[in-house]
Length: 276
Image (cartoon, rainbow, N blue to C red):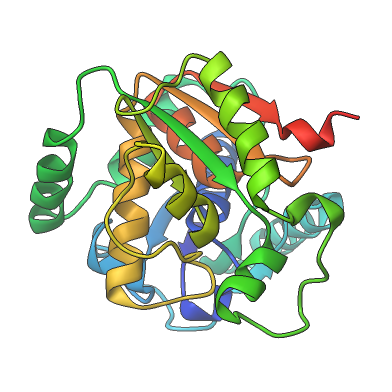
């Protein structure tokens, strides 16, 4: 059976890390069950910059969505089995289910090839990386969806704020000291965040940043924002080390899955004000 993992604007609440996590799961599943897998990003703005056009035609239909919780995985496995029993030749889906661990190099290489930058964008990535020092490190701060709303009115009322998401100057100063203790120094470290407030603050402290305005790719589907986020993404993938901070207990898929794909050491750290 052919399984198509399709990234569309209908999945706008999924960031790139969520989608790539689903690719890892599906590649493991298809190898185990001897199914054929196609990844199609051509109907999402990300597909302008990375990925390949599918070579095998498939039904042009809206993908069935399977979330990463336990029920989502169970429903996918049941639906796949039922599709085989009915003699169906194709499932078109959108999936962000967690893969099994450990992840081997065969699956890792498949994902690496799947998200390969297109030729012109690859040149932009190389130009950007050329401005960074050798063996640079990255600090990634996932600030939280209510900050997205506060910073630039993403979807009013959708994300209730939590006490951990208030990025005031006092908290950023504490985080700065933690980052320095972790060995990430100004002028040698790229700071990446979905928070405009945090990026501006750390830029003033001489941390390197990607040019442009931080916006979460799941909520802002425009070419310049997408390109900027992908520069951040591949900047993480070429780093000597990544420190991840997140207001969420599960961390951030954005830095988790690019570092997994390129085997970059990732240290997941709690925000200082979440330790107690």
